[in-house]
Length: 97
Length: 486
Image (cartoon, rainbow over all chains, first blue to last red; front, side, top):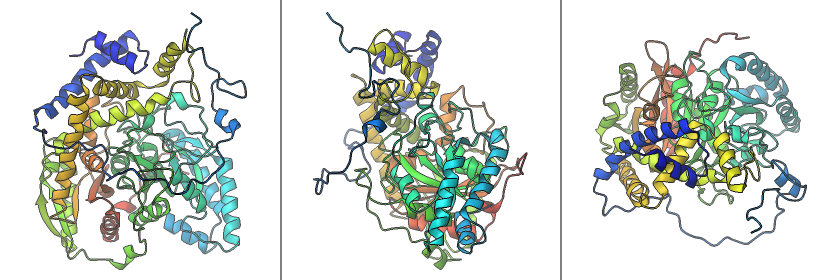
């Protein structure tokens, strides 16, 4: 069973503000889902390779790098919550100290 | 009930113009959508402009399989200058500046976009109840869910609010709602259709496809969207679908080997569903197919594997929603607090649950035990199908254990909701293809779906078998009776 403290830790990593009632609900619901997933632990998968993609993907060189128009600035900014017309406006990342 | 191919035929014969057809659909949408809530955005003006353009192209002698045909698009696919919400409050006012590649290809062929269709938030769910804009109702019984996550797409096709609809399928999100609404839904092999412009949920599983009124339309839609796209490095060049070939093998399945997986008929199945699917398999046999049992022994592991891998990928993909460049912003006391408040307020309960689950599975100390282990079991599930397809050409199975369930009946218990996808998740994990086609009704008159599963890039054969099934049955022609039908 996940504790509320563990839920708070995960929520911090995920950058999610949760209410007290959400924390309690997720503690029990996430525990139930993880218990369900525990059946995976019973399998012997020692020699089985993991599948990250079903395609046989491999790195390839891009053919010819054609110059095409990028996204116009006005389009890039059209959905922004706050802009000065040139850039996205956000709070300072670092304080002055 | 107007299919894509029938609409195209009427347009070609000048029996109707694209503008007239579009107006008729818009009128029907405005009459029926207040109850069904299938559309989140009805794009009256844009649709009529596209229809006028299609009529002009036809007047110039142009002809394409979709020219002037009114369709609609699940709201997780980007549409240029048309609001795209992903069913989320965090994107309630978001308008893309570009089309998803699948959308762009349909636009180039002259399809008319009627609007955007409701879905579970970020395509996470099996009932469309996770939409921030209210659930879609099932046209066969408006007290029941349409399935999900492409529930708006399935309901719109079933209620004849478009000729065909785009959907997406990550773990069953095209096939399960198609089954619950009695329409045809093809989940393509991973890589067959570009994911560019699809708002990403789980990138190793996400696929784009169509929900249609029959298998022929499914073939037409896939032919229009498929193939390599330089903007999606996982998209694949394929032998194109041959739509005309569907008609050449009209009435016989002689020589076809059909496998029936024993694991797909276990406990928890609604008896009517098992019965209708068995009857459908008998029908395939009566058409000349050789039916035999096959085993997919890791079927029961699909659900735990999926609910580690998909949330893990989602937790990374949804990190982009931080209130900076687009979407909702809830200002906090500093930047980190702004991220947290924005995401806490903008995401719904199921999306937060999956982000939390994925973050946990990827966190230090749990990565090997959950994420890597799930990826290893994914390999075993993929091998199950590879072994089965050494013995048979196609696998026939149920789509979902039950027919459409009542609204609100599973919202409090995530695992019960997840079990609605127990027969569709393994196909997604293996990256192969599967179609849901109507195969009858339960005792309450609710549709039952048959799932026909093919190997990777085996869509041509899957579509041919589905087409022959539909040429010899009429389940796909049944329509719901709708309150307030004009």
